[in-house]
Structures are given as structure tokens and as C-alpha cells.
Length: 345
Ligand code: FAD
Image (cartoon, rainbow, N blue to C red; front, top):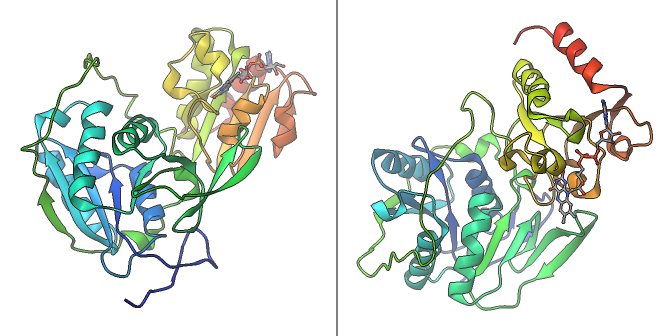
């Protein structure tokens, strides 16, 4: 078979050769593939295959699953197949059945690579799937050099590590969405086949886990992981009540709200708003940090933002070392002034 050299859009200049097939484990909501999964798809297309191409795995139940399958089938020319696991067993977003599903699909598909986004979903499911498949996953990938060589940050983003995968198939990867932007040209029309996963041998035992409930964020607010603007508050806000200043400013700017771990631990906001090494990784066009010291673990989650604005009353705060614009001042004076001067959105 003649191998084909393909230039990866995320890494112009690299030519990649490969034999194998790729599975992308995707999330969907409201009948469409979620943006982090589209980024995982973009990453997967950096490893195109001369024979077969990329398959997408979706699970859930009801009409929105079928709509998401149609969306997946048409969202990238490299997608050849959409595999749909339609069952109540996937109604709730639990990692255990999902990991078993990936295991089941791998047994019949024999994929060389399995991709997912390095978000809460991927971080929850993929290590479990890797354990079931007895392989070691490569997490938080930010670059692809060839089919077995990947780049990932270490030491809270202070160094980049190049990893060569020498294990058995499949090579399981979670990717950082911020490193694999979805270009408009990757949503051209395409018609991949849609087929149902045979679940007759599927074991849905949840083990020690039990589903309790799910809460989702204010739908009017942009998703923190994909927002163009993020307004973040730190411990200096002092209370959940004061944190509303950050929320008000975010609303006026059409921005997502972020928080430091100190603000989360103090109970000002829920932990899904945490930005950083142990929170979300963001790279918006504009990141505004109010009362954030700039600890290394926080910087690990936002240092790739295009423009960083910091307001802190300590001129020596480390956040100023990464800020494009810094203002030494009291946030309790600066934010009300901004709210007054900014036009209504
Ligand atoms: P502080 O460090 O207390 O800083 C508050 C800042 O506000 C100060 O710089 C102060 O000068 C300024 N300030 C005070 N009052 C005002 C005012 N009125 N106006 C303006 N400025 C004011 N942290 C994260 O954020 N995300 C993570 O994912 C994360 N993961 C971690 C993982 C590990 C393993 C560890 C050990 C720590 C982690 N941390 C993380 C915690 C991190 O080390 C810091 O403790 C945390 O980021 C500090 O949050 P902060 O900047 O809000 O608070």
C-alpha cells in the first residue's frame, strides 16, 4: 500500500505517514457534537489513514442522539463512519459504561488510535478505557509530530515533553482543545455511514458508582472552555456575594466566568469554574484576572490566552509577569468603574 503524506493543519510543515484507523470518542448536546470533541476530531485528522479514515463514537438515547449522529456524519470530510450506541445505559454521563463501550468498540474495530478531548468527560472516561484495554494513555496532548510521537506539557506547563508511544494498539490520547482549533474548512459537507453498535454483549454494571443528578451551568453564559473572553476572580473577592461583581462584568462583556482554586475552595463559586492545572485549560482572545496572584498552577490553565489583563493591588504580583496589560489597583474600585463605563451588550 502506498503511504500518503499529509500535512497536519494544526502543525503546518509536518508530513505524517501512517497505517491504521482512528476512533474519536465524542460528546454531544442538543443534537450537535460539542466543541471540545470537534477539536479531538481536528486532532485525529492530523493522523489520516490511507485505507480507512476516522470513525466517531457517540452514545446516548433519544432523538438528539440521532441528530448528533447526522451532525457527526457531515462535519468533516475525513469521517468515514459514525458508530451510535443507542441505549438508556448511556442516558447519564457516567464514565463506567462509557469506558466499557470504548473497550467493546475497540474489540471489534481494532483501532490504532483513540482520541478524546482532555476535558472532564475525556479525563474521566479514557484512563478507565485504557485500563480495560491494558494500555497506557497519553494525556493532554498539545502537538502531534507523527503517529507515535506526541507533545504534552509537564511541570504545570513550564516544559514540553515529547513522548514516543511504544505500547500495543490502541494508542489512547486525550487532546487539549486549545491546541487543535476547529477551522471553518473542517465543517464542509460530508456523508459518512451511520451504524448502530451491537450492545447484545454489553455489561452495564456500574460497580461502586451510582448516578445521583446532573446540574449544568447558566446556558446564557458561554462555555468556559470555548469562550472568546474569560473574566476570572480570585480569593481577593472575599465572598460569594462580592463574586457577583465578576459575574456582572462577564455578562456585560458576553464572557465566561473563571475562578482560581482559592476562590473555589473558599466556596465563592462551584469548582467547574476553576481555571488552572487542576481545573480547566483556557486560551481565549481576552483573559481578565481580578485579584489573582498568578500562582504557577493558575498560569498553567490560562497562559496561552491571546491578551491577558490583570488587576491586582500588589505591583509585585506574579500575574503581572504574564499580563499584556496590568493595572495596580483595588478591584472593588476598578470593576464598578468598568461596569459604569462599558456600554450595554
Ligand atoms: P491569592 O494567591 O491569595 O492571591 C490573591 C491576590 O489578590 C493577591 O495577589 C493580592 O495582592 C490580590 N488582592 C487582594 N486584594 C485585592 C484587591 N482589593 N484588589 C485587587 N487585588 C487584590 N490554583 C488555581 O487557580 N487553579 C488550579 O488549577 C490550581 N491547582 C493547584 C494544584 C496544586 C497541586 C496546588 C498545590 C495548588 C493549586 N492551585 C491552583 C492553587 C494555587 O497554588 C494558588 O494557591 C491559587 O491559584 C491562589 O489563588 P488566588 O490568586 O485567588 O489567591
